[in-house]
Image (cartoon, rainbow, N blue to C red):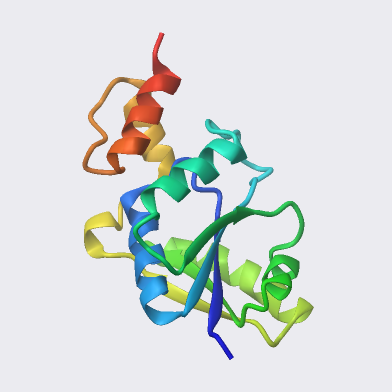
Length: 160
């Protein structure tokens, strides 16, 4: 049986930190579904479709990664994909507290799906999509934080 994992997130926008986790997850699992979710507590800059397209573009060189979106519960999406694991990236201890809550709920809903926490590469430990958007909004350089395709998309969003 293939080892399948889901790597969920809002990815608004995708950063090098996200890509670090996706690439490393793809090295561990035979198939990784990157699931773009709409976080109702956040006001997105990019539509779900735009985020999916950007992710597809920047992961096209990773053959075992598929980018999709889902509207319902993450655990239901994982079951539908026959995933045995959910990959969550952590930057700091503060991320762990938030992620632990979601993991606990998922364990109640389906204890057969495990959550794997991966620490992001140290060079990205400070990086968040919110920081990237803030820098880009004021025409700051973001090339150290995001792939060129994402940088271009950010420039287009804040043009004007």
